[in-house]
Image (cartoon, rainbow over all chains, first blue to last red):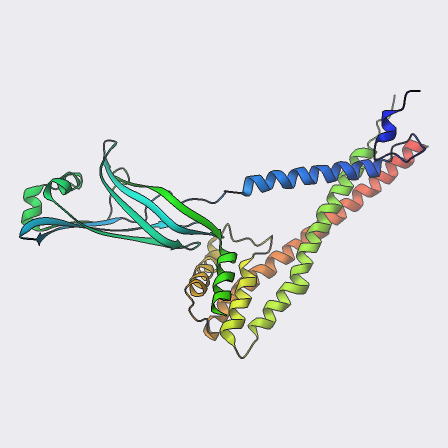
Length: 188
Length: 145
């Protein structure tokens, strides 16, 4: 005798070939809830917003004497913003680059130990370059060798977004609550 | 003409709204009855202020579901700034003294507003569920007649 497939359904009452709609609906609801929670969990993992622009980059190039040679000291001050409410960025490593017409003319690696939520990780780079190394950057900033030697300094408070950019090469993401709990436990 | 039986639709909607209402009730009343009084006790401490305030902040740092820290309007900027301030203080091991109580109360106030919103939304879902249960029962009665 052929057995009814309905009798195997959890919504059926044994011995009766009748589906209880409440039980069926509850089981369906349970399945949908589990599926929904799983899907939303997957979406939220790795959803942290990463910094995508430099905060008010300020650049200064000045002439200095080093080993009786005229060199050029470049000082860059900028930052990256962590706009996440609950994600701490740790050991952030990256490179700031100056570019002209798509080609990179100077690369500056940086490291920030920690950027807390809603905070700005400050980047301050100071480096000495030779004339050949610095002149493409000086030209990008609208200067040249003669101007630089005459004025001894180039200062730019706002560098055009087209000419400066950055890329992150490594970072760790951690939840702020875990970090703060660890800090308090460390202290106690 | 055959009458369409809508009881399944009513039943599923009634169960769904009831489940959502119960989840929201659990979350909101947990905050109202357990979390908020605990934070108030910590903030009313008169000794060991640094430790008590930091404990209170850790509780407040985990936001109420209706008062998340992801988005801020102009009024919420002070909350955002408070979070940045206290995160730094705790991360770098600096002291939190009694002059900062107002900023912690600001975070508590946001949490309270969130749980009140949650409580009201719970009431909305429970009323909605009641309506659908009534429709379900009526539809079943009509189907059996």
